Image 1 (cartoon, helix red, strand yellow):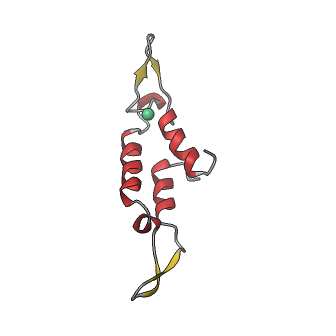
Image 2 (cartoon, protein in one colour):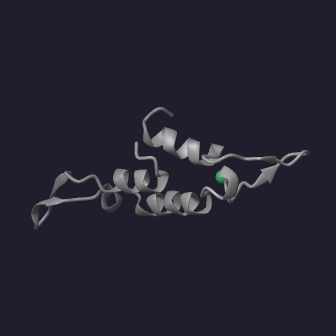
Image 3 (cartoon, protein in one colour):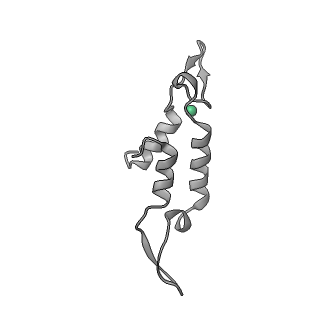
Length: 90
Ligand SMILES: [Zn+2]
Protein backbone atom coordinates (compact mmCIF):
# COMPACT_ATOMS: atom_id res chain seq x y z
CA UNK A 1 0.00 0.00 0.00
CA UNK A 2 1.49 3.37 -1.01
CA UNK A 3 1.94 5.82 1.85
CA UNK A 4 -0.32 8.23 -0.04
CA UNK A 5 -3.94 7.00 0.35
CA UNK A 6 -5.06 9.01 -2.69
CA UNK A 7 -2.40 7.21 -4.77
CA UNK A 8 -3.65 3.91 -3.32
CA UNK A 9 -7.16 4.59 -4.63
CA UNK A 10 -5.78 5.50 -8.05
CA UNK A 11 -3.57 2.39 -8.10
CA UNK A 12 -6.56 0.21 -7.21
CA UNK A 13 -8.78 1.89 -9.80
CA UNK A 14 -6.24 1.56 -12.60
CA UNK A 15 -3.98 -1.47 -12.14
CA UNK A 16 -1.26 -1.53 -14.82
CA UNK A 17 -1.97 -4.96 -16.30
CA UNK A 18 -5.66 -5.71 -16.35
CA UNK A 19 -6.93 -6.81 -19.75
CA UNK A 20 -10.46 -7.71 -20.76
CA UNK A 21 -12.33 -8.64 -23.92
CA UNK A 22 -14.21 -5.57 -25.10
CA UNK A 23 -16.93 -6.52 -27.61
CA UNK A 24 -15.95 -5.22 -31.04
CA UNK A 25 -12.49 -4.13 -29.88
CA UNK A 26 -10.72 -7.36 -28.90
CA UNK A 27 -8.70 -7.57 -25.70
CA UNK A 28 -8.05 -4.11 -24.30
CA UNK A 29 -6.48 -2.70 -21.12
CA UNK A 30 -9.45 -1.85 -18.96
CA UNK A 31 -9.12 0.09 -15.71
CA UNK A 32 -11.41 -1.03 -12.90
CA UNK A 33 -12.88 2.45 -12.75
CA UNK A 34 -14.28 1.93 -16.27
CA UNK A 35 -15.77 -1.46 -15.41
CA UNK A 36 -17.13 -0.95 -11.92
CA UNK A 37 -18.85 2.01 -10.33
CA UNK A 38 -16.68 4.88 -11.61
CA UNK A 39 -18.52 7.34 -9.39
CA UNK A 40 -17.59 5.29 -6.33
CA UNK A 41 -13.89 5.76 -7.14
CA UNK A 42 -14.51 9.49 -7.59
CA UNK A 43 -16.30 9.57 -4.24
CA UNK A 44 -13.37 7.90 -2.46
CA UNK A 45 -10.94 10.32 -4.09
CA UNK A 46 -13.10 13.28 -3.04
CA UNK A 47 -13.16 12.11 0.58
CA UNK A 48 -9.39 11.61 0.59
CA UNK A 49 -8.91 15.08 -0.94
CA UNK A 50 -10.73 16.52 2.08
CA UNK A 51 -8.89 14.47 4.70
CA UNK A 52 -5.36 15.68 4.09
CA UNK A 53 -2.54 15.97 6.61
CA UNK A 54 -2.45 19.51 7.97
CA UNK A 55 -0.19 21.37 10.32
CA UNK A 56 1.26 19.43 13.24
CA UNK A 57 0.03 16.12 11.78
CA UNK A 58 -3.65 16.93 12.35
CA UNK A 59 -6.23 15.96 9.71
CA UNK A 60 -7.38 19.11 7.88
CA UNK A 61 -11.01 17.98 7.72
CA UNK A 62 -11.39 16.37 11.14
CA UNK A 63 -9.40 19.07 12.93
CA UNK A 64 -10.10 19.15 16.63
CA UNK A 65 -12.99 17.24 18.15
CA UNK A 66 -14.57 16.45 21.47
CA UNK A 67 -15.19 18.37 24.67
CA UNK A 68 -11.50 19.07 25.15
CA UNK A 69 -10.91 19.57 21.42
CA UNK A 70 -8.43 16.77 20.99
CA UNK A 71 -6.55 16.88 17.68
CA UNK A 72 -7.43 14.12 15.24
CA UNK A 73 -4.10 12.89 13.93
CA UNK A 74 -3.67 12.05 10.26
CA UNK A 75 -4.34 9.42 8.98
CA UNK A 76 -7.67 9.96 10.70
CA UNK A 77 -10.26 7.17 11.17
CA UNK A 78 -11.87 8.06 7.83
CA UNK A 79 -8.61 7.64 5.90
CA UNK A 80 -7.76 4.51 7.88
CA UNK A 81 -11.15 2.99 7.02
CA UNK A 82 -10.55 3.55 3.30
CA UNK A 83 -6.96 2.32 3.26
CA UNK A 84 -7.84 -0.74 5.36
CA UNK A 85 -10.58 -1.65 2.90
CA UNK A 86 -8.22 -1.17 -0.06
CA UNK A 87 -5.74 -3.52 1.59
CA UNK A 88 -8.50 -6.15 1.81
CA UNK A 89 -8.43 -6.17 5.61
CA UNK A 90 -11.89 -4.72 6.18
ZN1 LIG B 1 -10.00 13.24 8.70
